[in-house]
Length: 287
Image (tube, rainbow, N blue to C red; front, side, top):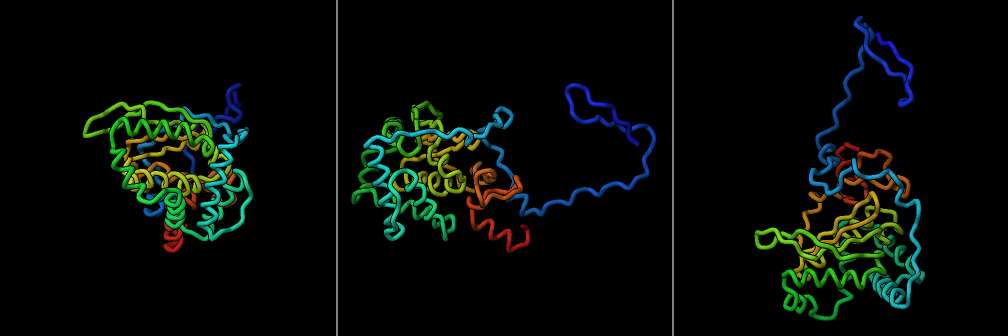
C-alpha cells in the first residue's frame, strides 16, 4: 500500500511512499526490451561536445535573425543558386536567400542521403576552375598557416551563407602532437540551418559535403560541429572528420516543432540524416 503526502511549495504532485505492509496487487511486467539493431541505431555517441545539463531549453527558432544583404552578398547568393539550379537541370527559382534554400530542398527531394551529398559536391566542383584542386594542394599543404588562412577566408567571405562568424583557437592533432592553432571558425547562429529548420539538410547539404570537399578534394581536413541547441556551429580546419556513423550528429532527432517529417518519438534519429538506415529498419520490422 502507499500513502500520499500533500505537495509542498516546491512540488505540484503528492509524494507517495510505500508503507511496511505488503501489497498483493498484480505487478506490471517489465518494459519490453528494444531490438538490438534499433538500440544501436538510436544510441547516442559518448563523445559529444555539448553538455545537455548546461544547455537552456529555449527555442532557437523563437526569434529569427534579420539579414540585410548587400550587393556582394546578393551576388554570391545568386551565383550559388544558379549553380544549384543547373544541377537540377535548370529549374526556375526565386532570387534571394529564400530561393537558395528552396533549391536545397528540391535537391533533397527524390534523393537518398548519399545522392544529396553528391549533388552538393557537384555544385561545389562546378564553382572551381580547371585543375583547381591540384593547384590548391600544391600551394596549401596541411600546415598551421594554411589552416589559419582558410579560417580567415571563411570568416571574411562566407557570412552571406551562414551569418556572422569569428575566428578562434582550436586544438589540432598534427604529426602526433597536440597543437593550438587559430584555425577554428565559430558560426554564431547558422543562417542556413535557421532558414531550413532541418537537421537532415544541415548534415547532408552542408556539413558532410563541405567536409568532404575540403578534406578529400583539397587535402585540407575540415570538421564541422553543429550545435542544434542554439543553431551555432564550429568549423575546425586541420581536424579530420570522423566517419558519419561515428559522428555525434548521426543519431540526432528531428526538430519536432519545425519539421513536417519529424518523428514524434524523440529517441529516433532524424529520418533524413541517413535514409538507408531508416529503410533497413523498416524492412526488418524494427520500426
